[in-house]
Length: 100
Image 1 (cartoon, rainbow, N blue to C red):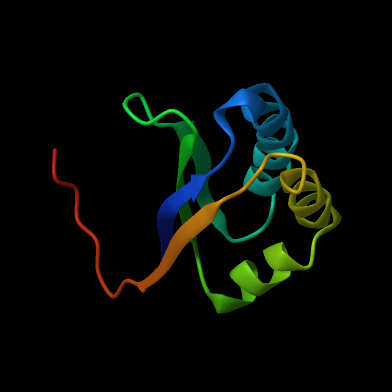
Image 2 (spheres, rainbow, N blue to C red):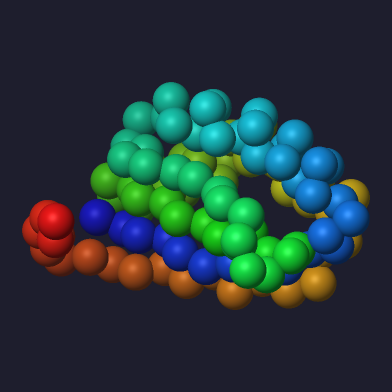
């Protein structure tokens, strides 16, 4: 399993623009084969920061995601959000177990 986590820092005045782009991206991505989970959440303590959490079944699924039209559309929309930093990490997970 591949886990993707991190943050995107953007112009807080562009929150509505970012949320609109995310609202189109997330349902389309969740419908992709190999997508286990996918989401973006606004930080409750840091205006202009969105947290990213994704789970992918394998490398092929993640690569296919990057090639989708909805991902290309999202990346284009991000240009209107005043992105100032990204800190996105890939984790290759060998095993997971329920914590709670």
